[in-house]
View (cartoon, rainbow, N blue to C red):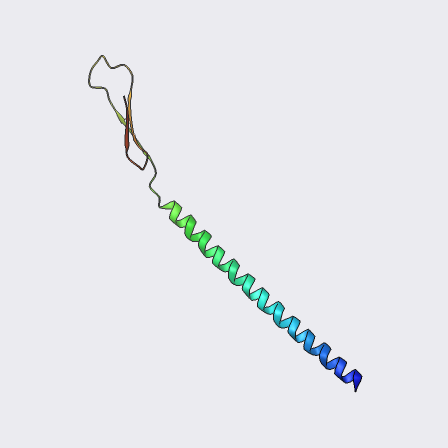
Length: 81
């Protein structure tokens, strides 16, 4: 009787450990899937961000020897005189 009980408890312990392993593996897989979706979404969102546009203006007078630089950094237009 003692050996039957010991075999039964061993089988129950193995079943519990197997269930815990399956639960842990499924949670890890779900977490990896969520992380992958967030990473892909972040990469796609970064692709559509506005990029700074560099524009040049020609000086109006012959006295102005240096180039006037105008660009947009995404927060507003910057004019370097």
